[in-house]
Structure formats: C-alpha cells, structure tokens
Length: 586
Image 1 (cartoon, rainbow, N blue to C red):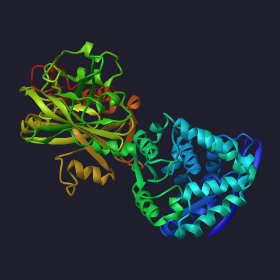
Image 2: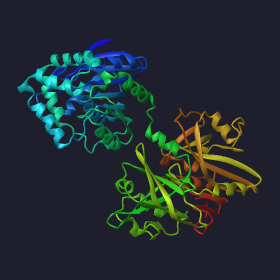
Image 3: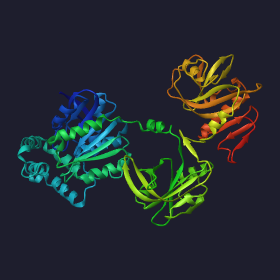
Image 4: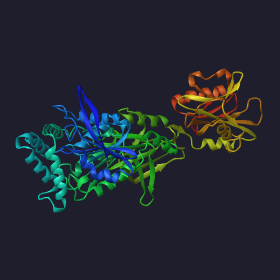
C-alpha cells in the first residue's frame, strides 16, 4: 500500500491530504466517517484491490490531513475530494462514503456529476426525526464539555452494542484508538457539521444521474434502514440494501457481506443514459395517453410509449412512469387509470400531452369510461383499468392495471421510433409497388450535416447502389458505404419516385445516420445544412427531396414521398384520408 501527501487549498488556506492507495483497475475513492481515518478501510483494500484501484484518504481534521476551516461547510469536504482526483490525474471514479463520508460523497456527486462513475452511501443519514436530531445535536454541543473519552465510549456503545460482544472486542478497540487519537478540534468541527447536515440533500437526490447504492445495517438506529430506502426512492438510478443484524460499523465489522455487495455493484457497467436511450429508440412503439382523475376531480394525463400487454387471464396491461415526472405522485397512488392508443392522425394530441400545458384536456376531446378515468376520443384503442399493482423498477415505477373495459377501431395507430413519428404500414407497401430497375440511395446525417460524394467538376451526389444488399457486392448501397469506410445506421424509407426521363426505373432513398464521425476523405464530404451545394446536385428531383429532408429534420417529423419527379404524395400518415400532395418530391 502506498502513502502520499497531496496538497489542497480551501479558499486562501493551503493544506495537506494524506492518501492511501493500492490495487489496479477502475479507481474507487473511499471516504471514512467522523472520528476515524483512511486506515479503517483495510478490509476493503484487501478484498477489492485485485479488481480496482483503491484510494482512501483522511478527511479534513482527521488522521494526517490538515484541519478544516473554523466553520466548515459540506462543500469544503467535497472540494477536498475534487482536488484529490485532480492531483492524482483521475477524471472519473466510483465514490464510496461511510456515515459523514457518505454525506461528502453525495455532495461531491451533486456538485461534480461528471467526475462520478457511481456513488455508494454506507450508513448515511437523511432527514432525521426531531428526536433523532435533538440527540445528535446534543452530542455535538457537549463534545468539548464532557471530553472525548466520555464521547468515544458512548460512540463505541452505539456502534458495537453494550456490552461489546466478545467476538467484536478487538475491532471495537481499533475504532476506539482511532477516536482517541483524532485531532480534537478537527473532530469537533466535523461532528458539528455532521449533526446539522442531514437535510443538506433534501429535494436534491433526483439530480443523481449515476448508479447509486444506499446500504445500512438493520440495527443502525442513527442511519436507519428507512433513511436508506427513502434516499434510494428519490434518486433516479438507485437501490437500497439493508444488512440483517448489522450496526453502524458494518463495513469494518462484517466486511465479507459489505464487500460482496460492493464488488457486484462496482463491476456493473456504468451505462451512458443518452446512448442507452438511443439504443432503446430502435424499437418501434405506439404512442399512448395515460390518464386518471386527481383527488380534486380534475383529469390528469401524459404521453407515453412504454406500454405493454401483460396477461390475458386476468386481462392486465402496464405502463412505466419516471419518478422524476411531475405526474408521478398522482399516478403512483391512483386506484384507476386509462391508456388511449393514439391513431395516426393524432400527433397534435401526442404533442399536447407531452407539453407542459397546464390544462391539456381542455385542448382535446375525451370522455369518461367505467372507472371514471378519461379516454381520448377517436383513439385507435383504449383500455380502462383498475390499479392491480405498482412495482418499483429503478428510476421508474411499473403501473399494472386490470382492464375493466376496452375498445378499438380500424384506424391505424400512430407510430414512434428513433425520435420521430412513423407509419408502420407504408414502407412495405411502397417497396412492393416498385417494379423494374431500381437505384437505392441514402441521406446520411451527422449533427445537422449531410454526406455527399464529390463526382468532380462541381457535381455531387448522394451515395447510391443498384440494390440495398448485400455488403459483399461493391455495387450495392451497403457495398458502396463499406468501400467508403462508413459505419452507418439506415433508418426508414424517405422517398420512392421514378427516374426522370427513364421509364420503369425507380429511385429509392432511405434516411440514416453516421454511427461515428470518420475522417471524411476522398469522394465523401460532410456539408452542413446551410452549406449544401444545391446547384451541384444531380437534378431537381434530388434537390427537392434533400430540401424536404432538411426541413423535416428541423421539425423532427418525417414523411415518405411516393410518385415521380414532378408529382406525388408525401405520406405523413397512411392512406386514411389525411395525406397531402406535393408537386415535386418536396
């Protein structure tokens, strides 16, 4: 184990932080509780060092670190953590804190979320009751009066029991020695802050976007199981663990149990939420309005695509609701709700209920069904439900409903995929209607720039092939893209029209995106939307089509053009009576 002394600076005051470090792998920073020092983490160094780079340090006023300010703030201790990572050249780390260290870990994660891979709060305090607060504040106020020896004895009794079980005597003595050797002034200042900081994060835990673990002991009266469960319920990506028959010093007393849970949690992949959301977006869904009646009798609803059937007998369906949603308190406690599956012409309804408009039902047509829940008129289908169960599921709840009544129509449903409304039926119909020779091309976008191929002489074109597949055929679209070294994701059909001046020759274009921005060279060039060389494009048909793409990308709503170079239809919905015609592929 290596020991280092690293500089830190709080305001104008410079100081030293003592650090212990061992192991290799992803960095894990350990922050001890009040009255202790970094050596208390010896069982974690031994168990976790084979898979992780373990870093423990003495907090301000403890061990061999410099004292805190006379009136310290929680942010001072979090700043010590930040400067420690900077000094060690670590951009992101897993952060584990115990007791006071848990408060510091949470403060650090809230102030510097980009530096935190995950957070673990062991035996954390949160929103003490008046009686709990009075007790800890009294201990802080009398710390200097009664002396550290009396205070330390009381702490050992709380943490290990009275009398201390014979099997824990050696560990209790180790902790007692640490309490007896801590700097009295640093201890007193830190303990006063600990006594008054249990509400420092009240209402803020919803901002913890990294994986979070809140763990305590069943017998820890001061950092109770109720506190850990409440914190886990308020943090979006959190879970709570309660160890049976354990007290406040469980990480030191029963490291096998604590380390086993830590190893599993720290080894979990720290998913990029944005990338995960994009991957989920590849699954096409319908669009629904979830609705209920509030206690005051007014309707409440929101747009959702996390809807699924669950069971036929009994008839059950489910929807998912984010804990951070404004509607969460209403729907998590409702006794009944309805789900309306929107029809293809109800995009305006979808947008309305996805907005922050205060009275969404005033701008829509609806009626009440069997349970009294509102359903949207002209929906493709609707399900009126009594609440069957509410299941905790990470940063969401799963609301399961038993269907009391339902209905449907022949109207096509509204589709949604990869951030845009889609028509599920149209693409296959359009492709089936083509005959004869075809050319298959792609409009590939990256951050509002489109990829074009330089044909020389000021001419440019979209990448095209004589067919879509296979990749092994250099003349297919996939083959052309592979030859250019481009990793792409093709999305939905964008246009189908006849080649100008060529009978029985169809052009088919997909829209797609570049999965990574390569070093564009040779023929391939990226052009920002406002820099596209319109005059260099092949013909008016391609120009018109590409202008439509730019416009619809700005609106994030796409259609499919079917026709010829002069006249056709942009199908924003299916052939249900609501398409509009265009005089070109625009």
